[in-house]
Length: 163
Image (cartoon, rainbow, N blue to C red):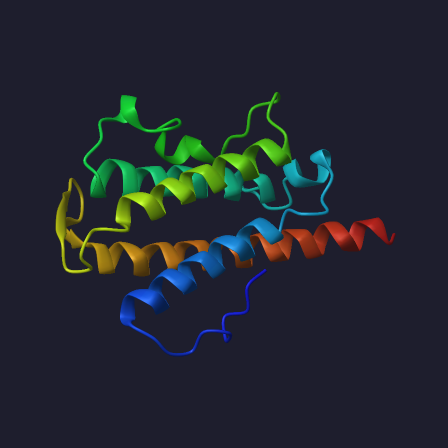
């Protein structure tokens, strides 16, 4: 996992991209070492699971970078565009499959954003006008929050192993 203090200066874009990649890596790290059963364990009343958080993050990458930023129709996006149902992981999907899905979506997001100016704007159906800078900040915030959720679930899972 990258260290968020490793790069502490640079252009705004370098810092935003570095911190986004860091939060992506942190989220993935929260499911490493969990068994398939543990990754799917529901420890809160909602449908939230460690692997479901990574699955949802892959959807968020597709929604914001492929659909909103690149303007691709849902059919051209590289995975399901299912909103809140994106937390659901199929019985045939493994932890490795979901991590790979998130990594593919993240790589495509990097490619899409690479030549777009931070001030470039796009229209979102609910939020109105958004810039690439805002999308980066939103994704950093969302992935950091979900990594925190998953850290807690991982900690609770580890505690049950000791009992």
